[in-house]
Image 1 (cartoon, rainbow, N blue to C red):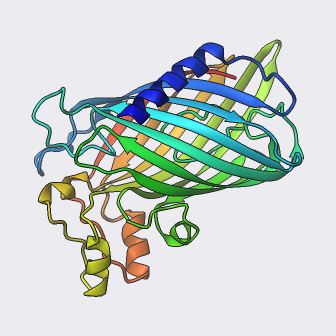
Image 2: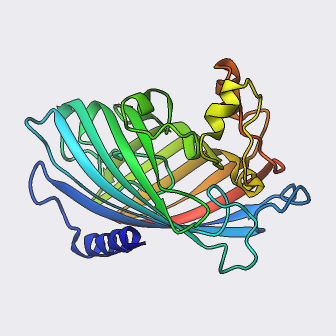
Length: 319
């Protein structure tokens, strides 16, 4: 809890002090985003699905600078989420107060690239796409590798470590995050196959000036998987050849959710808005199911109906 409080304070201080870059190489910024989900009628009957309306407030604060030369750009980001449904929740809380969850994410990322230009306005990614990135990627072409430490107020979950990799080519970005696979072998992920267990996406961002106004727009398609956890259960299920991961605590099944998201957003002078079209819990199009089937790994059963939601959002940023 102390770590989460520190992260909240760091964001507030960052938002207050953020300003134009103080040098050609050093960069810092902050963002605040609020969204609300309107769910479809399929969101009912099978267990207890999401609230009809659920919200998310997300913040991001980041600092970065060149290192050794202008070809290396390490960054440190803090991301905080407050939410009452969707990915990360288990849908078994007894009251509206208990449904509130706060996650804090600390990301350390190293980006290396070509054609360094600090005036670009392409987001510097470091994890998923739940918050608006606080920093810009200063390269025309670049690759990123990093790790994310994730803390939560949810007492049924534990701290985890998730790896990240990203590729940027002139505004087209591909990214992936996972707690296992080669990230675990590089110690960027903890290898436990749990919670924010994996995902990825493809996006395109473009920016332009109209008179004195700086404007940018982005389109992104992404996939995310969140799962429950019992210590060593994934490895045991794999060793005995089970098709599905079983949990000692059956409530852990209720964390198992998948999400496909199509997102569009527009920003003018650091104030923006957008909309996400979300598909939750599709067994047919669950990318993790396909990967685990191809690699002979047990899959995480999703106990919910497939449903759709429309998620409008607003945000501000200071860079």
